[in-house]
Length: 458
Image (cartoon, rainbow, N blue to C red; front, side, top):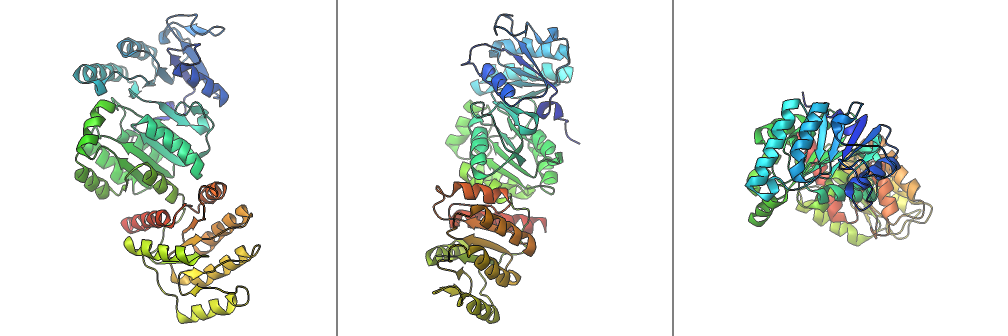
């Protein structure tokens, strides 16, 4: 049984400690974002200067607030944090986010301050996010402290935890561009109290979370993480980018979040052992999260390729073979059926053995041609990758692929040309559970992840 983090992600009240009327201050931006998103709970402003936010009621300290407080966010200097934490504890605050830096990432003195802060919080039963973090985002709660300049977020099934504010921001903004929606997001910084393992357990139990992603520099408690990961990966896909693998990267994590980064090969072995999908780099992490938007896993390694240019078919074959996926030749009877069907519509068509190369499908007939071709191929493959030049009916083609996926009960991935131009289609395709990528190589690696998870679960 994990920690109940509902007061963090679904608070009924928030106290902003260090509130300011200065629009350049992060505390001000957070309050503005909460109001822009119509956060339904109560917002309390706290500052030792009661005139800090003109025209607003400002309390001098959390303990002066008459109502209960689920969540407090501290925007105060590190030297003031211990007294603010103590006051929040007296008030009965359930969770506190310590936004500012100046703790373990600065060395021993900062580490002592961080440990003392955590000890004070635990004595009152309060939990801490951070320090040195951006906070949380939860679209269903009307909260986004991470990307306050672009606060609106799509709700969805991805939950994410990142020690780096940059990685967490990238996951949110980049994820939106890729068609991902989010359930809960936390920038967790130094992990003085709550850790990656705690968030992992909470996300694992959260009914709205379908896929879990994380950027990790160091595990505070290796055994705790191992136990959590073993359980959660049986329920949901977990993708982790473990950074700080190189000597230089490990050295810099100490000054970034105060984490002790483990050896790269050890970290990799641990992730594989627990069923976590390892990502290397931010783009690989995002591709993995996109891949797991597929509601289905393949039943094997056989890939059906439907393309409309020969070159991408060749590239697909090379990419599949490089990662251990199979491109089975279709039986001669199926090839004859394809030839009989396509010869009435396409002149010429280039390949019917797999890949099936449709060259240029006539405008307006794409759905019929792709649908019938895939129908003939379906009994002989475990998943499809479809690469094509769609007409303007992006929604129709994306919907067709989603319908074919459900009909065949096999994952389908899409690769349109000119990915930078086809963003609207790619976003829609991914939202419909047909993960979309701007290159065949990225799509193949994504499909390999789905195969790997299916084999690990099996």
